[in-house]
Length: 344
Image (cartoon, rainbow, N blue to C red; front, side, top):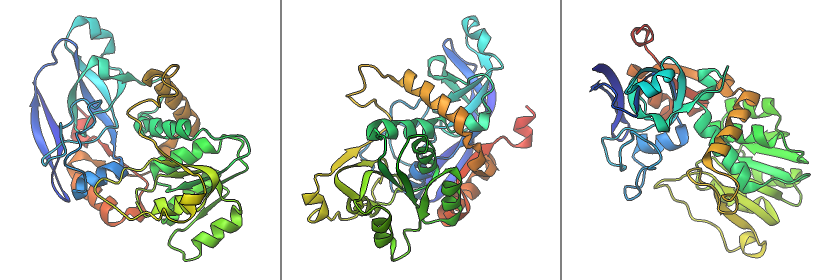
């Protein structure tokens, strides 16, 4: 038996860390001790604020997560842990090794061996905990299919936006522009190589974008999490361009202005969601191949430089309050073991 702690969302803007007693792993299972677990602020803040759609099931690809969006629920999907016990001798070689898991935030957890993704040799755990969001960024690239010499625009430079911009910067684009409300994120976007990063709160955003992209963007990504940004994406994308919608808005809604530029410009509005492979790619791509691409991207980009805050799991309420009340101060927030947990 193992004493563990697990994070529960119990009501809007309320989380609790509850003690749990885990049994010994069954055959086909492993017991892991968490090294780090990253908060995905876009999705998790919807859960924290109670803005999730109650009629949509939680992604079934995430083992250990609550089955539906109903309080209380466990959530989170970016955990890196070390195997401390296995359920059968066939998995004995896993002992002491590190794995990524789409598992809710917890100090220890049981997981199916088949659901664990081994870290590549030399991969730092704090880089590995970005795997879920990097896979999302790779999926966005696959859905957008940037072309040589295109003008690209990315709305939102949270962690998914920064990962996306890092990948876009590797393409021979003519210009890469980004947009974000917070100075810390704008500075990070410029540091990774964006040609310019604009503030959407400035009243001259639209004319500035038009001055930089007179014919509109060829390819626009909306990853801000703000529904009203979709209107900006539509208005700033040129004739025949593509708008890739990567945000999940939950219950948030905003009216779209589809009677003007959108109606006449033959835009393609494309939904991008990482749980599946785009049908046009599925003959040659599967999740395993995409994970391989995401690991390679993590090795190149080293996104742990964007970790701004580390909290022990017992301070989860403070971590979510920071992201809710002072998001301008944070980029990536991770849970790390308390000194007691780290020492075993």
